[in-house]
Image 1 (cartoon, rainbow, N blue to C red):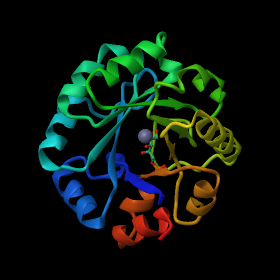
Image 2 (image 1 turned 120 degrees about the horizontal axis):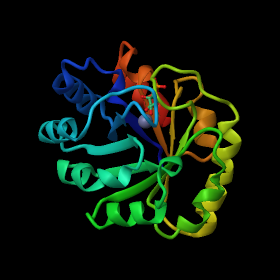
Image 3 (image 1 turned 180 degrees about the vertical axis):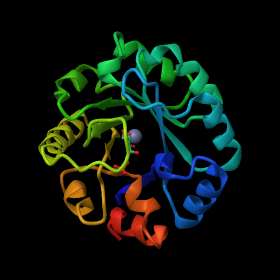
Image 4 (image 1 turned 90 degrees about the vertical axis):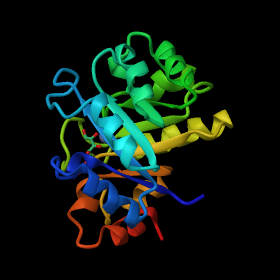
Length: 216
Ligand code: DX5
Ligand code: ZN
């Protein structure tokens, strides 16, 4: 199956998300990646559930919500009611990861677990039966426009093996520093959803950027 591209609106003009959504829908984005940051789990602060609710009114495209917040269990119900289609929590931010996944799935939406570049995928082993998406960070989360950390490629291969061994349909997403040059080796390592912020938003032809990252 072809890879999907989930452009991150973190790289959009924050005064005009409606325009960004229109552009991404016309450019053929497979999903819209929404980076929620709380200033605690990561240094940066972005936006919260009211923004997800507003975005939901403007697009039918899958809203891929990446929560970079401490104790995300506190806000899962709110983000689900706001219209998220996928909610991804960080393993490092959850005291009760299994419960967080069940809370997401109780809303009938997809549950993702993300791990930082230095986190071992071993923490995913006992939730493989429950999770719908695994997000491997390829930069330290907090900001767009950072450089891809090459050690992530080996981890992607390991997680791909874990997914294949599970026999389940689990998306493997990679986030941070993805560009038109490194997308092919990221896909070859087993990723099937590629997040891209700057690479899509700074390109003169975002539709072309999405096609190249997807591998078309
Ligand atoms: C980083 C965010 C990423 C970011 C990716 O903390 O989670 O989604 O927006 O941006 P680029 O593609 O510019 O590295
Ligand atoms: Zn992200």
